[in-house]
Length: 456
Ligand SMILES: [Zn+2]
Ligand SMILES: [Zn+2]
Figure (tube, rainbow, N blue to C red):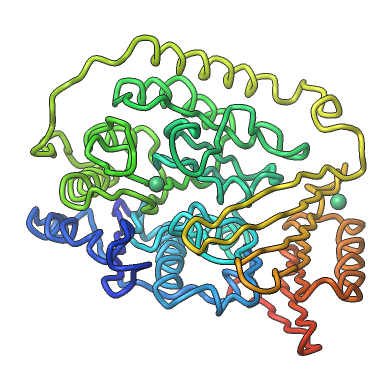
């Protein structure tokens, strides 16, 4: 019989912070902890608490190119946050749990494929690490990530932009009014994964009613079509009406109803900075919703009552929903050459700013348009730390389901870049064989990391 329990890992990382006054700081989950204990939630037979676990360096190398190495970008807290998500996923896949909540920090959804430092409070992407882990260790192919943070999940989007088997849906406050300034409806994925990225920007000030209009009319129908084997919720809570960074008006109950409708296998905490007025209530409500419990009594003390929505802004959201439903329904009929050109490679130039570490990165990303697989990716990345010499690195990524031709070409690209003096580090990430290579030019040394065999 399938177990009916909800797993919880609570890892508040009380000893880790960017700086003492930073919004993503140690106390973030302090009141949440009190709330969960006071409500006696952990005594409910449907909820089982798990001790956290560390992710491995290899779990991270399967996703990220950390410069210069994984160990230089992560602390133990990062490994625990990522490892807690994979731990709960193991228990879900093995049938010990029906679902889970990784109530952990630091967050991850702004961490992109290449990591030169911390951006948007994130170093490594917990959900992306989980996706690659699920594919490698459990053979799960189709995965959906729904991001409910007020900020666009630009890191997650970046990592899966060319991946047809991962559906990424993000709704967030309009990027023209908030960090990181992206996440518009025309960002739809690359030529091999068109419409596998869906962005719904929301005008500031909207509340639960519009939130659920988007869920009911766009997100749930798309998920029904896509039929993911595993659903991950990037459970950011900064859409809450008391959040100091966001300007939306969602409530704890709105979040709980969203959780009930989405029915994710795993919710992973992202942002949320109203540590006293939002997080304890939203986290409790999400946990109760996951466990199939009544959450109607969870109400914030500051709850202002139902507010009328601005009709002009609501209409704007309705138009975006209609536009994106159209894109989704016609995704297999569009002329991709018209959108992406006819070249063997599709390329994009990216300028990436690391707001926490003040790094400016310039990237040239190229993906091979392959008829037989998602195509390998190369990234030429130059990061300016504001002092001395910028870092320049070259990265090659081979997809999980790579064809032989892409694999051969990708290894050639890696060898070729090793011969070019401008790159201080050259990386190869072969997801198809779970092998990771890193070449350090100054040391003249290559590091090889091979993952455990499947089933171990
Ligand atoms: Zn956020
Ligand atoms: Zn190929």
